[in-house]
Length: 357
Image (cartoon, rainbow, N blue to C red; front, side, top):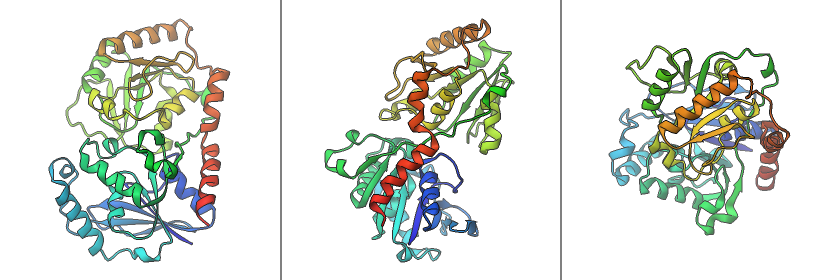
């Protein structure tokens, strides 16, 4: 059986939902092509493993820019993506028994393909496209309509009831770190992830704690330097980002107010689960299902800048006084266990075995 997986980035063996699916399908013996959609330059395909091939969808027009998603009318966006998908000469979609589409740009394929589709709903359109445009919600609903089933990180009750039978809830797992106790904790804060962040708050934190370094990991492109103790590392691979994560005193998720509103249907992300499993104090902007502080999980939730600074001051004092350590309670371990990578993979295997035969 031949399966195409369409994502917005390359396959790597990570805890991302779409990578979990690719890994699972390959381990089950299927021939899997993992397609990155889309690239502005022509990149040659490569063989990742014996049955995973990495492909790249090339915008041969060289016209599209990401900013177009904000202001181009929906019919023009549809016209462009339908044109490049129908007129490309790289991929013969008819050879695939199934196509797995990740949320975001890959949903454009559902307008064209007649293959059996699985929709991996990792993020709602307002996050995947960073836009609340109704056009993207309609694009998502079209993908759900065309799909045989939806592997969703978002609960089904947040979508129209007519889709409920298609939804199978499957959150991304996290990869536990077994050697975390051997790491020396430094005077550092860390943020890891994507989404729009609150730069004014980050500057206030760096001013309030000048002896702490704030490591920001993710594809953020800020040319203007803010403060000497704020380091934008850019995108890092696992072996690179795990070191500053482990050595930091506090994991901070300083989402902007606008972006946190986009997360109205979201719960714990894999990066938060990782920090919880390490027993790290976590300071984060309230969003979605996370609205209140949870002391057992060491989760400190703020709504305003003043609350964030006061909470962080209190967290630092407790760390210095030995009142806040890296121990993980039994209750929290019980919460985390079903969400470990291997357990999520087993859960996913059971789901996919019922549908793909």
